[in-house]
Image 1: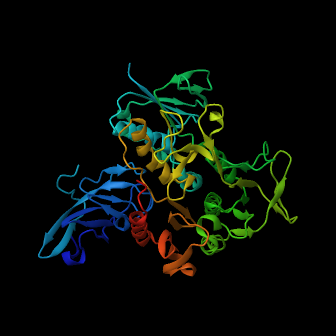
Image 2: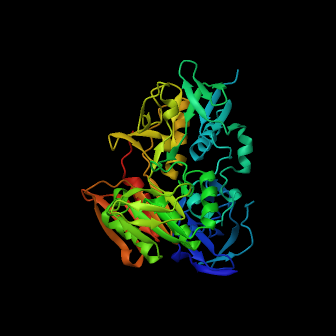
Amino acid sequence: MILVCATTALPPGEATRVEADEPIAVFNVDGEYYAIDDTCTHQDASLADGWLDGCAVECPLHASCFDLRTGKVSGPPAKTPVNTHRVLVADGMVYVEPGVAADGAA
Amino acid sequence: MSPTIAVVGASLAGLTAARALRDQSYDGRIVVIGDEVHAPYDRPPLSKDFLAGTASLDDIALGTPDDADLGLEWRLGTAAVGLDRSSRSVLLDDGSGIRADGVVLATGARARRLAGSDGLAGVHVLRSLDDAISLREDLASAGRLVVIGAGFIGAEVASTARTLGLEVTVVEAQPVPLAGPLGADMGAACAALHADHGTRLLLGTGVAGLVGTDRVEAVELTDGTRLPADVVVVGIGAAPTIEWLAHSGVALGNGVLTDARQATNIPGVVAVGDCAATWSTSAERHVRIEHWTNALEQPATAAATLLGAGERPAPSPVPYFWSDQYGARIQFAGSRREGDVARVVEGSCASRSFVTVYERDGRPVAVLGMNQPRLFTRLRRQLRSTVPATA
């Protein structure tokens, strides 16, 4: 389990990147936290730098879209989904469990 | 009988149009016609990873497993040679025709060639997969590359060739590269990447001609200079592929003329992507945009128009393009005009990491970023919300 940050440091609409074996992007969508692989599966770009639109993030480089809940591609040019990671919130802190898929993700 | 829609063009715009038709519940027949034998592929990597040999054809394929569910009928390796308005048929180069209830024109653009370069080995343009494969083969055994034109394609090819170890010279007729899209100051800031990475950039110099009998040996400049070259890449822009529509009755200008909802003057015929010159309410003229993102965004509107899905307001997208060269990421959104004021709001040109906002009458109209994807993306989105809708 990796400590991401305090909940106050990640307000709604914001994203942050944490280092793990593969970097992970953590998002706050209206109080719900989601974590996916940070690197776009299309080309090397950080999804934490992307644009949040509801439960989708748009890659900052070529506009590929990924569903934060499932990791699935919701817009090209990416073709391969990203991995999701389980997020835990405890005592005002946000944690991720790398390699453990989020509940409900494929 | 089930209706038929013919999509002419099997690249990003055509494939996206076919997907959009299904997405909007059209369940009739869709025939996709493409003059290339290849299934749809992504063109941007052709000057970068694919040319460098680090991306395969599989990597750049546009199709996904889900596309099998679209039930598309493919006619690849077949060029459209005409459109018969009375029967609304697309005429093909194998002599056959496809009668259609609706037609999507998505034939793209083709690279402009240098006059007098036909038949000279070693001279390339870069637009298609076959172009890229042939250039890649030629670069593998070459030592010296001359690129004619310092636009984005030229710069990306120069960058890739440097990573392959070639000696590269870029020749540009204008005094500053990219001054049209970016303005002189920012064009110069982007062109500075060439020198950083050992590419020689010659500005304000025209090409008088190519030297060589069977194979190119040198590029001769208007000032008399001869640049020895094993390979020459001509990157001087593209022209819309619309000649085949010359006698069709479809209104043509610098592209197929459409209204803001991608409709042409012929009922049941729409146009999208690089071949379409679309009416822009804000610019008060037809605008043809050769950006990847445009080819991705226009088809949804075109599909709705073709299917008669009500009078939804025309979108007013903010044009966006990117260029990856020498490891730098250049991104631009919006529309710059002469006289707009460019202001660096973050970083500096000297550090090769900056964001520049272009203002007109005190309002932001465009944004340029180099190696600043996060802030650029924010400003690009803000631009989207400040551009008035054209409803």
